[in-house]
Amino acid sequence: MDKKISPVRESIKYCFRQIKQYKRSYLPLSVINVIIGAAAPFSELIFLPLAIDALMAEEKNVPLILFYFGIMTTLTILLQGSNSVLSIHLAKCEDLFLNASSREISARCMEIDFSLTEDKAALDQIKKAREGIQWSGGTHQIAGAFFTIISNVIKIFGVIAVLIINAPILLIIIGVLLVLSAIINARKNDIDIKNFTELSGINRIFGHICWEMEDFRYGKDVRLYSAAGMMLEKTSQQIKRLSDYWENINRLKFPLNILDIIVGVLRDFGTYLYLGALAILGKISIGTFSQMLSAGGTLHSSLQAVIMGAQDIAKRSNYMYEIIRFMDYPPAMEKGSRKIENINGGHEIEFKNVCFSYPKTGVAVLKDVSIKIKAGEKLSVVGLNGAGKTTFIKLLCRLYDVDSGEILLDGVNIRDYDYDEYMKLFSVVFQDFRLLAFSAEDNILLGRHEEGSDKIVDDLFEKTGILEKIKSLPKGRDTMMFKQFDKDGVELSGGQQQKMAIARALYKDAPVIILDEPTAALDPVAEYEIYRQFNSLVNGKTAVYISHRLSSCKFCDNIAVFSEGTVKEYGTHDELVHKTDGIYAEMFKAQAQYYV
Ligand code: ADP
Image (cartoon, rainbow, N blue to C red):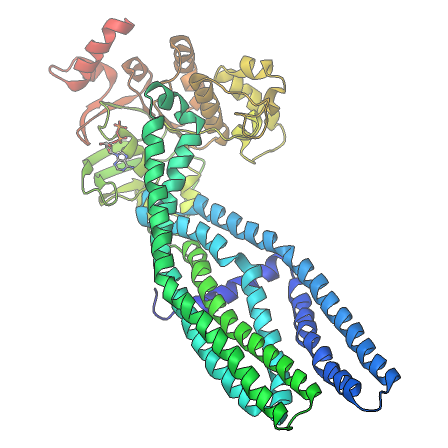
């Protein structure tokens, strides 16, 4: 854990920030509740012994006895009643704060550097943050524990004042045994905290396997390759790990639980012995005996509530701190602040001796790649599977940073540019693009609704050849993709989804368009249509186009042939296709028999 940082302080700050942001009234209501909660036991503590002594007196003053009981009952009902009403009201905020934390974590997941989404430490931190919400109980539980402590501190001062006069030794008995109890509890908390990392790891793996089992995208492969058995076996392994984990925790805590019981018995025994002796010796009346007993009980429960509350806050804060850690997760990439000049104009891109390996793999995927893409140029990137084509695009889009060499935009290293602005340069359709389970239109607009956008969307659907399909759907553009949120949602084919993804990229209208295997899932007719329209689709913008189908290269100004992580050939289709022993010429010949 970071040295100077106190998880408790950070978590309390986090809670107060959430209260301020999401429910300001929570704070004053909690303060009122603290005062009421602290006052509640005193009505009984003050009036009950008076009533008992009045009852025991030789001359019974009935109106006085009734008065004592009446006032005690009324005060108790009023105080405890309003305490419970307020507590219930405050408890309603629990979900509000929990959901707010959950949303904050999700939002952060969308903005952390992309490379971290494949980084085990970062993934573990996300899992820990998620579990941190659950285990800390969120702002309501921590703030609740904090206010309970304050309320109990007030009670403690009150009962000490009552006890010190008649039974000072009881203070010592309760104090000493409570310290023992606190030590035991601290040991138990330590056990939970020390083992939390292991628990998160197990839950992350278990959750991931369950997610794969539930996700219908894996459904076909799971059925056709009979993978269900293996998946279930993997979950069984994690369930076994989990049960071993809890068994171990229970074994570690068992002696502490026994000690806890012994301390409780000693405390009760000591209290009765001491107060009984005082009463027998005539030092206190029966009323005072009952008052001291009740004050002792209140002192013990209040002290315990303070100590346990403090320990509870410390423990919960450690869990909550995992949320804060994730929110402050250090970036994986350098980001500059330079503005891009004439962002919507043409831009020259240059890779200069770029080398790259995926984080923590040590395997060089791109080796000394140098290539220039002029403004408005259409570049086709081809090569066998695993040659590094997609990686080349990921680096260009700053999803990862190069290991050495540099990527320049208009002669300036892309690291120097403002990251958000740089991301505006690209419209990309990745091979593994995903549509969201929202409406067809929302999938294109992604919140960028503007005047006339309906018409633009229809035009794009028309250009990418999906308009007819969308129009045939019961709710047209408002039809939901997939069935997660709507039973009438539609399951489009791979090719249709790809057309939607291309329409989405074109709607962004960025100056550089990148299509990674844009036609892989399209049938030959749709592919031909996309190619035919390609120039009008990209509308004179710079375009990088990765494809396995070399016929598409004819539409491009230049072709870069990737092989073994580097650009082995570069030129126009006509130059490369006639090159003796050229990779491109070979690949083209091999494919031509199917296409020509
Ligand atoms: P292509 O697009 O030419 O098929 P890629 O750029 O996708 O090739 O992949 C190049 C190499 O990088 C492959 O060996 C692949 O296994 C590896 N690779 C791709 N993505 C990752 C990743 N996220 N982590 C580690 N290795 C990766």
